[in-house]
Every structure is written in C-alpha cells, then in structure tokens.
Amino acid sequence: MEPHILRRPRTAGWIEVVCGSMFSGKTEELIRRMKRARIARQRVEIFKPALDTRFSDDEVVSHDERSVRSTPVASASQILLLAMDAEVVGIDEAQFFENDLVDVCKELALVGKRVIVAGLDQDYLGNPFEPLPQVMAIAEFVTKLHAICVVCGAPANHSQRLVAGSEQVLLGATDSYEPRCRDCFDVNLSAGLDTSDDTDSTAQSTS
Ligand SMILES: [Zn+2]
Image (tube, rainbow, N blue to C red; front, side):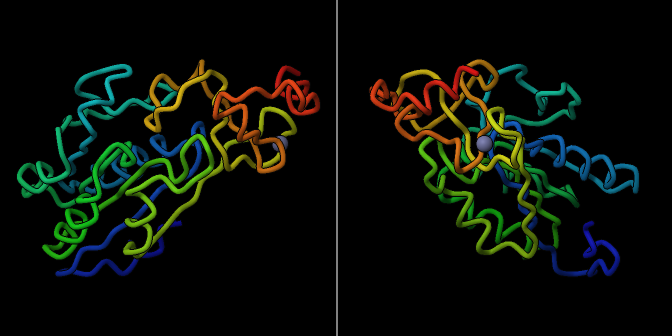
C-alpha cells in the first residue's frame, strides 16, 4: 500500500485519488491516510464542499463515524488560498466541486504538496461523475474501492438509487441508496422510471 511514501520526493508533490461507489469506504481511507501523515508530524488540512452538510459543518465524517476535522469551502479555488501551510491536502466529496478542481489539484502538487482526493467516480445512473474522472487522469496514484452488493454479495461498483429524483448530486446516503454490482444494478430504478415490467430486478431489490 502507498509505495510512493517509501521514496518521498523532496520538491515535487503528487496526486492520489480514492474513488468508488457509495459505502465503499472512501472517506474512511482518506482519513486513514491523513492520520498516518499527522502521526509523522506532517501538517495536514482537509477540505470538503460546503454543500455537504449531512452530519457536521466542520468535520469530514464517514459513515462509520470516525472523523477528522475539516474546512468547508464554497469552491475549489478557495482551497488554494487556505492550504498553503499544509504539506498534505485532503479533499473529500470531490464530486461536488466544479471542474476547476482539476487545476487546483495540479497547482497544489506543483508547489510540493501531497494531494489526496476522495469521491464518487460514478453517479446514480452509472455515468462518470465529473470532475473526479478528470482528476483520476492526472493523478499519480488511483485507488478504486468497492462496497459489497446488497443483493448478491459480489464487489459493488454502483450506487443504486432507491427513491425517485433526477438531480445528480446525492445527499443523505444511507436511506436512499445501496451498493450493487454491475449485474444487480438497475438503471431504471435509479432513474425513477417504471420498472413494473421488470419483475426480476424489482423482486431482487426487495430481497
Ligand atoms: Zn450483485
């Protein structure tokens, strides 16, 4: 794990991405890496989009409630202003930022910071969820995590939406979504379309 730490460069920084579906432990992994850096007495700062107010205004909170304090920001460009004292910059819920997050990550790495970006790589329809795919492309290291499919127990790559709605931004995780594998993922159910003709998948979804 994290072999790059073994030969840590002194001048240039780099970008790490931790991605996956909902319930895959992305925030938990971000916090684990940040805590390790803090143990090494590195200066760490975590940022998250201000709109992610699910649990707390000043903490990154994963669903298992292990948390690290963080700073809510209105836009990715604010991170550039606030992160200059940090050696390690964590960015959580990256899917809620605009595409300028890509340039912000590049800039932070260029000035020597280790940048760790966590977020959803797909939306509830199974489409790439910008800007994270762009950040993955420019990152040195990408870790893709998986949840476990609630239907069949296979590694889950998709966030299945269980309630109707068309907005791409997903908030309020636990009640409205569940992790599913590619076979069990039902895009029509996620889209809120009538799935009454598709008795197989609806029967599976309630089992
Ligand atoms: Zn499955």
